[in-house]
Amino acid sequence: QDMPVTGPAKRRLGVMGGTFDPVHHGHLVAASEVAAKYHLDEVVFVPTGQPWQKSHRNVSPAEDRYLMTVIATASNPQFSVSRIDIDRGGRTYTIDTLRDLRDRNPEADLFFITGADALSQILGWRDAPELFSLAHFIGVTRPGHVLSDPGLPDGGVSLIEVPALAISSTDCRARVAAGEPVWYLVPDGVVRYIDKRGLYRDAG
Ligand code: ATP
Ligand code: MG
Image (cartoon, rainbow, N blue to C red; front, side, top):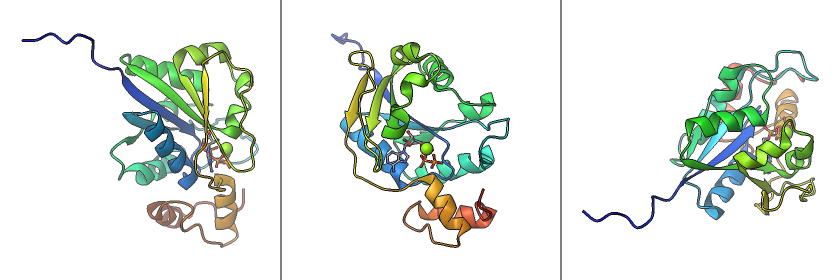
């Protein structure tokens, strides 16, 4: 039997972290674009854990955010959802997400996908230097935010333009609270789930 000349190509695993309260088409388009442009084998969506201290607003229960993310991604064979941040509990730090994913996928190269707004805060993140040794960072354009390289280590970050969808979870929540539609901003199944569970009816 012939031996391969080189080892198998490393699996390319995208990581899309977020609160996903609710997940919307801006998240899905960003993940899809990065998957295509970077030839990713899979993108795993990772909903954040439940903050234990009351923050500036009440984040919806982790199980609701998790299920909406599952509903939104179920039809795409390249997309999956991980419970690692939810099951760890407490506030989510991206360094913990990446360490855990690296431990569970030692054979994979990790690509952390982040919108322009989150990327601009990146240097303030806990353990910023180690972050860039764990994953390649891919910053995507987002309407209303400037996409710029916040002075990251050489080659640690790539910036790409994705179709502009001026959608935010904050706006979706406000719309539901005001009795306005979120059809076509979030996947149909997510509209139904929000309604079924009565999410976002009281502005929070
Ligand atoms: P919220 O308004 O509650 O902060 P959000 O819409 O910003 O919600 P998050 O869950 O905070 O959604 O975002 C997860 C990731 O997706 C972040 O990296 C964010 O920058 C990115 N993202 C969110 N919306 C868009 C969008 N419309 N286009 C591109 N990237 C986006
Ligand atoms: Mg946000």
